[in-house]
Length: 207
Image (cartoon, rainbow, N blue to C red; front, side, top):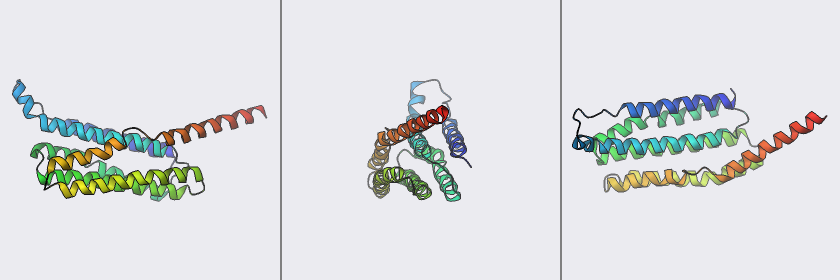
């Protein structure tokens, strides 16, 4: 399987996940501000989950763009990541329905934690398949530190879910903010590689 096909499949699954989340929002029967206000926890949960899934999509896109060859382990680690992300619609609906209860925040934090661990595993399998690319390996080693920090923060969010559900959700948001802006280092590597390809094509055309 080519990296392009892997990326296209992942994009399709993530698009379906977002669609399912919005379909979970039922319009109120009454046409009033009070009825809309009653939906605010569900709408805020949808906003949070949309943000989280979008962050995964952007960073997944950047990571897969650096892939040269796809292995079986890479495919399964990618499927594992998509599985945990696919639970966000359920976690969102549960969180919105129970208005930041300890168990709903624990569940949401656990899904976020599993997603971060899965992203770490996918990064590791990609690094394993590209050991010969020293620039790529060094870059991913640096990005792993941020990935590990996100995992630790999600663990803290799970630990805080019963003592302070609001603090737990705030902690869940922090890694998303960390990953909100794609790594400039990744973009520089991709641009440099693209320029090298163009130069080699120009040289080949002259010959």
